Length: 80
Image (tube, rainbow, N blue to C red; front, side, top):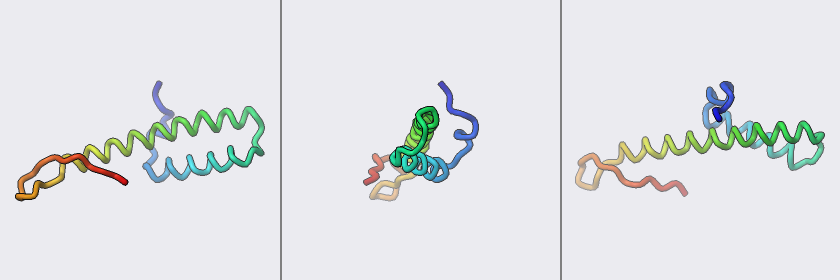
């Protein structure tokens, strides 16, 4: 299942900001059930998009890491 085109075009930061807004609305418990379900579905798509963007960034970092002796190399990137 592919993500909606508007989500696919988002940067990580845009998707994360919208996901945070959705979580806030859902936590408030003020949205009607149908709206909550739609928000939850969109939130799941945004979460998946963020995870994909993070994995792509991790792989890019691993490709550009230089070894201690100055030679290019790949090391696992750690994000804490």
